[in-house]
Amino acid sequence: MTNLFENIFYHNLVKEAANEPIVPQENDNDQTTDAEAMQATLDPGTDPTDLDVQQHTLVAAQASAAAAAKMVSEVQGWVTRLDEMIKFLNSTDPKSIQSQLASAAPKSLFDSIRVGESKKISRVSMDIASLSEMLKGYLAGATDPKYRGV
Image 1: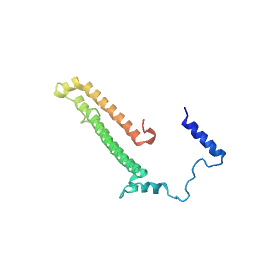
Image 2: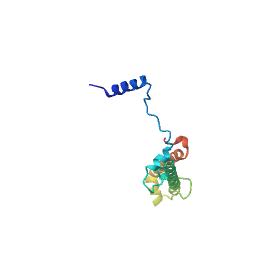
Image 3: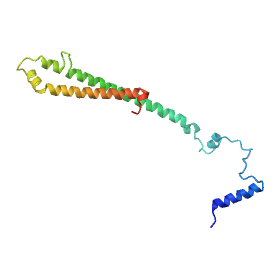
Image 4: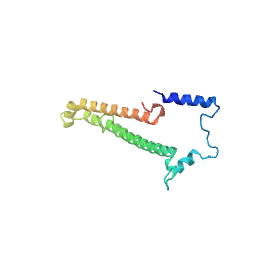
């Protein structure tokens, strides 16, 4: 049984011993560039710039950046609304729920709510504050390149 590679190697050794070129020489008359050769293979009416990878990469990067900026803006809106909710639930503002309940007249509806639900309102406010802070962390990572992908 003969080995194909052994035969090729032996054939090249024989050529080398006879001072014959082993690899065919390129045709010096053919000065076609890679771009010209590629354009020659295209269908009629095809624009070669449509196949330019750099152009499409730039367009994709711009679209990705625009989508990321839109998401960052959306999350910033969420954080703002969550912070407003925290202030509404539990802050020193006289219009917050906890402030109104704390200053409620004894044996009133607000006093009953304060006694039964004050801890729950505080707990919900803390959970919302935690979510707000987590979202702020994601925003920091989205806008600062050193945190990207974390």
